[in-house]
Image (cartoon, rainbow, N blue to C red; front, side):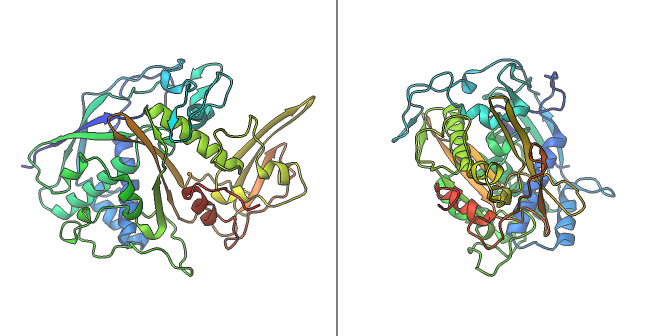
Length: 418
């Protein structure tokens, strides 16, 4: 009988989990873990050339089950953690001071200045009146995830473990994982299973190398995972972006920014500054983003000006605006829709991740999935004060298309051409 393999996991960045804002019990849930692993399995499989949807669904169900068959892999959480801190302002969420970053990014921070951590938390998790609006699990908390692999198909086990490696390396658990929260790391693996992939779970990633390879060659052994194709070459000019996220260099990119920080809080703060600066279209080499409230090119040229182009809409994310000048108030949102008025909610293709480089040094690793953000024929619609604006998306081949903007983000460059 197959025994359980125990993964000793540690919370790296604050983890927000659970639907009930008042709940503090059982923030680590197997269904949430299973959902995250399904996402990363699809990304890993697609990166190995499994792009046919029926084949992808079949291979996913072989591991995680479907409506007719149970999962081949069982999981359970041991030593559950407790969440807390709702209504507080922890040290990691406070304004930085005395130069959080080294290497040319030193700066003094005052209470009224822009806070990158709070920006990444967003209105759903942060309120300037109530502070944190939901309980969270503190970094450093540890729990055990027990996994019972199948005893009859080692290929299924290897594919599951490769998806788990991708989840721990690039993803997380709970809310705002794409913005650096809810990260986990494996500190130990115990049990009778001897699969070679287990060793990689506890190794510190080489982030510089991962930015080029996505998945190390040592983890892509065809004899283990059964996939012989690997999309490791850059996409050609005539290639069409895939419909789903693909964890392979052809349609994925990652980079470790040069900044070196002293804590995950400082890394989150600087990551928030970089992302806000990029969205505003100003150059990210400046020490701080433009004074709040920032004026993006779309606000100046399209919302308040005569231009109908809305380049930032190419990223597929809803963009809200609030401006008050005297007795006049502008409050509205621009979002994507398909014909007939059906709204679209798209997850960000950009992931931000504070990474522990050494004992006293943190960095920022960011990666992007080059996948079809919006379906063919999608348009833009405004609500509130923006309801009458007739805005349009840039064409796919333009310099302001989603692919071009993601390239600029990875290059730490300006978002829009002058």
